[in-house]
Length: 240
Image 1: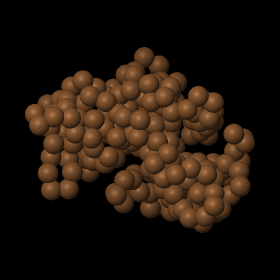
Image 2: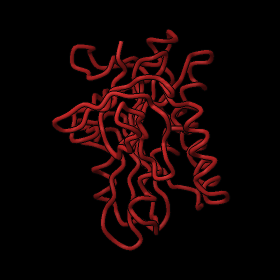
Image 3: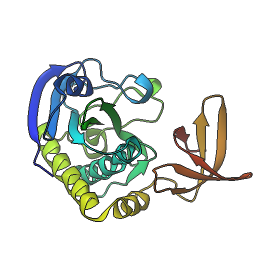
Image 4: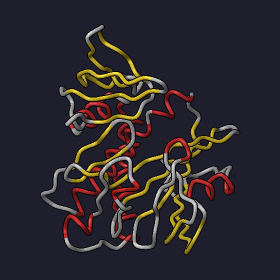
């Protein structure tokens, strides 16, 4: 994999939107911003991104089918988990399917993948990590936290980006050399609530069952009273 270029901006609407404006690229490009004014999460949800947090997008030219591109959220999740462990030694870090990272049980990071047209496809891997700040709990779908809240100090965003970029590059290189299997195994080893009851909330219904697996296509496998269910997309919640 070619080493990425890095663009650091003082302010932008969102790093994923900036990635779309800068596409197409022929080599990987990291876009980071001190502050985002219109950051988004999954399904267009608002994502808090004040100064002091890490907001970055890796723009990749990838000649892969859409299903293979979607798997790269696992690589990003592992890189984020390793970053959080680096910043908060001794803390519990888990990955919540499909695209969140939990620090001591609270959400500290999110990932958003978007692809743009062209050949090769332009894939934006947007990553937000709560380093200094987290949103008010009343406004969050999941209890939020930050590295500062858990450790007492806020890391430098530029230094955090350097660690994140190195870790993500390593996972992408491993995939290129050995395929998705070792990435999937590493992700599952960090999966929150694997083997325990969870709720998968889909449009118009909620499925409850035991979180059994994430399959080779990245779908969640839920063991329910009616048998195993394969879920490609849902919001996941943990029953009390």
